[in-house]
Image (cartoon, rainbow, N blue to C red; front, side, top):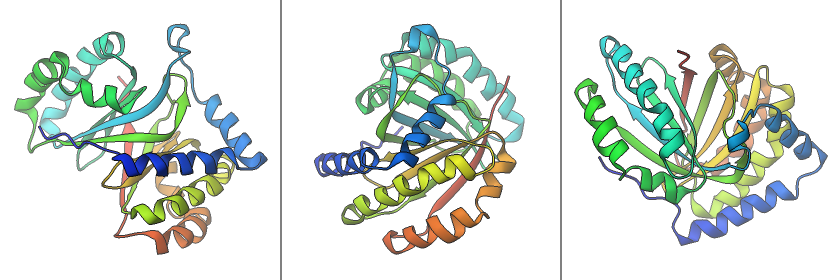
Length: 249
């Protein structure tokens, strides 16, 4: 399984600039932080953890094999959260084209290290392997700002991955910071919005209460008129848009 290593040294500078954008935002950004915090319900044991990276593993699994794959996810979720260094959350996301396991970690280094553990490489890969219809897609993203708490509560996720050159990333970070508070305040069902980064692209990870609300946001004036208009000149290719519902056992 090929792992994508992320955030070379030049990206560290960009991360600092993006973080600075968030810190310099006005009172609306403070409202955004409060709203994001209200969606997080960490256990007492995990209150000091912050999610600073996400590991996204997307899997091509036929409909007939999805129940078995969900069984593997449920079997190893607790061992992941209790035994893996830096683990903060794990969610199974589903859509027609594929399923995705979204892992939260305190650091990018811990996310990459997990891929070499026995729990992943022997146990999980061993049981999931026969269920796959194609090679998995593995992405490791660093979060522009660490997310307090253990887990963001959402019923669906909208992932928008953007090809943006290094020179344009600070400007893209400003667009993200500008519209984060309006998104959390005005978009129906919005629960969270995070900017994730790696060498290949950046991703805006949106949390919603339902999949229907996630899809509806893509037709809203806030997205089509404001966000798309300002981000458009900064893009190096067409965005990749994925909407997943969160698996509930």
